[in-house]
Amino acid sequence: MGLDAKPVFTPPLAPLPAAPDVVVIGAGPAGISAARTLLAAGLSVAVLEARERVGGRAVTVPLRGHPIDLGAHWLHSGPVNPLVALGAKQGERLRRAPGNGELFVKGRPASPAARAALGRAFDRAEVALTRGGREAQDRPAETALPPLGLYGRRVRLIHGLVSGRPLKEVSLQDFPTLDYAENWFIAGGLGAYVARLASGLPVRLGTPVTAIDWSGPGVAVETAVGRLTARAAILALPIAVLQSGAVRISPGLPEETEAAIRAFRPGIYEHVILHWPGAPFEEPDRLVTLLGTHPDPPGLLGRIDGTAFHYLELDQPLATGLDRRDPEAPGRFARRVLADQFGTKALAGLTVMGATAWRHDPWSRASWAVVPPGACASRARLKVPVGERLWFAGEALARVQWGTVGGAWAEGERAAREVVDHLTTGRKSAASAAE
Image (cartoon, rainbow, N blue to C red; front, top):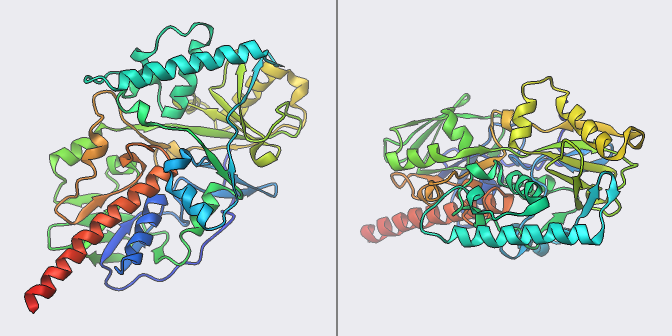
């Protein structure tokens, strides 16, 4: 069930400078953001990207004439998301995500009373998780939830889905920072928007980095096509890639840095992408909850951008459980869920377009990084540069917007500003000494 269409937009890229001030490793949102910030400050930059495209885990492809995101799709937390403000400034067509969803019970629209009861269960869970997150001692987020009655399992499923792992494996102190108020979508797809922001940047595609040597005064970066040296490097790589050892770093990183990297768990959030013109979902871009049958899907997004496309979401337990089967298993699961809910006849015209598998992509290895109980300090620890030569960036370092493109973008900017301050201060000091 592959999804191998080419992106809807491929940006024009500039050649790499021969002797860059900074090497940025990774051309996902964090790497693109870092490169733009460094160039705006007057530094020369070389961006190295393993894939044959930019955007990382944000990519939009054409499916039946429509732009569909295979990875990140939402612009979360509009008031603090830098990509929302930037998009508005650049005239991008943003649309506010609906605040209410649809609820079906055994194939029928739920009553107003049922919708209200589900809303109250989520509200009680939110209060309990937020209060628990302020405690001095960290613990699993699951343990903070009060009895939630009929809808307790549904609340746990959805919170586990958006967390990337079941709540028993998620830090309670980290959880409440996931602020999803005022969400937005962007016309043409989020991945295409991110790719447009890379236009004109000095990026070399298809160039995985194999080793980084920071033993000298700067950094030396090894790739399959040769070595590149610079004064500093920003590692805008997914945590799971760093954990894999795909990039050899020498000398070894400080123990605190290594421990922070090791602490994260891979977050899993996958889509089964459906084309279903006859779906009973009425409004575009609404979250759909299906109850009363088995199995319950953890989430579904209906009528994406007003089209006949829908995402049936797979959480970590479901996705990894399907790994033990054949490649068509996600599609069969989606059909089974929808047939149990709406009946087999209702599925006439349903096409399973494919399923994402970020957990198996060698350049991502997960959907995002999850902080387990007791490891809440890991995000902050990775913000400390190594030897004043290596900086880390990416969604895993974002305290408020972890797991999101907005968080990755903000952390790319943050790391780049720190590099600018460090390198330009050095230049000023050298100039003063020469006078």
